[in-house]
Length: 578
Image 1: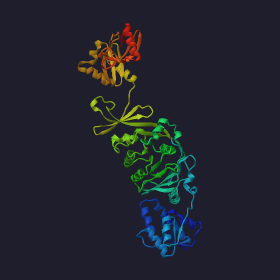
Image 2 (image 1 turned 90 degrees about the vertical axis):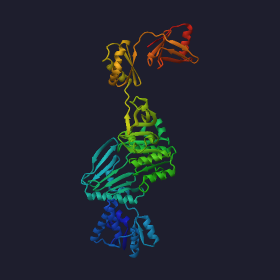
Image 3 (image 1 turned 45 degrees about the vertical axis):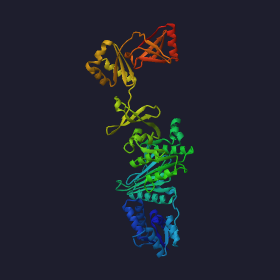
Image 4 (image 1 turned 120 degrees about the horizontal axis):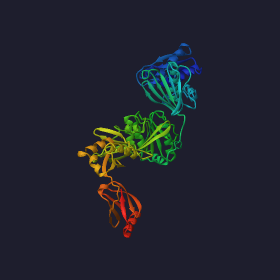
């Protein structure tokens, strides 16, 4: 019997296994030189399939020396390898062995005797699986080292040694088995093939096979999800749930590696699907563990931009983009978001604000809130922080002059609505400024401490936003202000806040009262602008605040307005205390 194996059979190691098991014996194995050349090129490029193929030919040479087969090489090296392989099989009246469906169909169409090999191994036979159990997050195999596993949950795991030191040959066998299985199993595939680096997806397990010189020693790392969560497991507030289901929003899920951000993203994807939305994913590599109804897309012709073009034609309601890392990824994310697709991106960052900063320089500053208006930060498998973004024109925090107003991205805590960052341009620089508001009590005590250094008499401090109103005896005012305002400037510098000085008056003030058709105006003078006062009407007090014009206004038909009108009509005393 003459057998011509093509590249697919050589790579997956099937032929040597059949010979060793005795399924075929004393055969002529004819390897086309075109196959050898193709494998050599792949191996020189550091591709795992080329190395696996050459290892298989070495195994066949051993079987040849043992007298179990007759091995020889045939044919030229130049031209299309698949076509050369078919021509050799036809010329020598040999049987073409292949695990490539297209190759098998073409050979059959040409009348060549062809044997398509079905799957030989089941997943349970993969050597790498013996290192996994129900609590294993990842397995790390490294040449000349003991295997180790990370066991537990994100944020609560331990490192465990498994077995004896592994040799390069043992690792090569594991890698070879992974590659051949990925080529035969319909739910598995080689996701990324680079020089000295191969990423393989075996069902829900992602495996990285890395060789020298990219890494100092041959190593294989396999990760496998150990838990699948639903959106209800995160105990989200209804407001946040509604935000996630709004396709007019762009959401970034951030977190450090292994924090559980992809687990959260797939929980969102399945939640959206359950609500009747058309959901698809963009992944490189594909490793989200989602239901079969959610289509998972890889880079088309190695380009995520082409994938995005196709998805725009498919018109999904939501797209989960995992992972958004490179500059081009952020640009694609922005383009899809501005096209009107509900978008959920997954990105690496140590803090929620870092995820926003990754957009700066990649997306025009003014449209960042249109691209991303919500950031959900995951750590240890839990939601640690949620930020929301808005765009406005204002004077940035810490600045005073009105002519410094500019477009500002305001970043708030989603739950408290407190502003915690402002992002704006200052000169040529984009500034991400933390907003650290001191409490009124802290500001007040600080101002009191500074004022006490300058006067010994009685005074009072009231904080009104970014201004401290200081009330001192009238005789102290010139001393506090100083010549040309020098002293008050020094006090403001020490206190870290703008200060306005007012006379400290404790006596009763009889105001002027003006009755209008719709309002009552109590005038006490601009000297008391901004002061908190009590208005006494027949012994009963009303709390109020004096406007910048030295007035207090009430609607005529309000409770306070009617009381004032009645007091005037009855001739009762009305006075104000500061």
